[in-house]
Length: 117
Image 1 (spheres, rainbow, N blue to C red):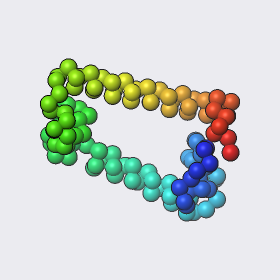
Image 2: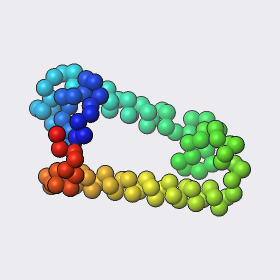
Image 3: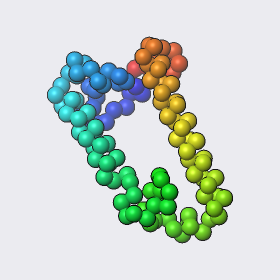
Image 4: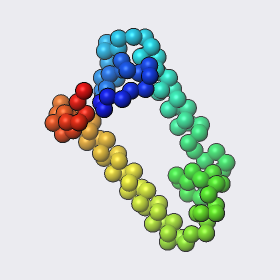
C-alpha cells in the first residue's frame, strides 16, 4: 500500500489479505472492515439509485438535478458522454482485475514498485 491509512485502519492487511482473519492484530481493525462493508452495502442498496424515479435511462443518477446543464445538450452529445463514461468504467474495471491477477501471482511489487512499504 502507499503508506497512508485512515486512522484506526493501520493494522488492516492490504490486498486479498483483508479476507484472512488470522492477519488481524486487533478487534478494532476487524470491526472497521465490517463497518466499511456495511456502509458500502447500504450506499449501493439505498442511496446510489434512482431514488426520485426520474431516470431517463439505466445509470442516470441525476435524480432531477443538473437539468440546466444536461437537458439543454443535444441527443448526440448525451449519447457520446454516456459512451465515454461506460468505456471509462470498463477500463477501470479491467485495470482492477489486472491488479488482482498480479497480486495473486505475487508480482505486484515488480509492476508497481512505489507501492512497497
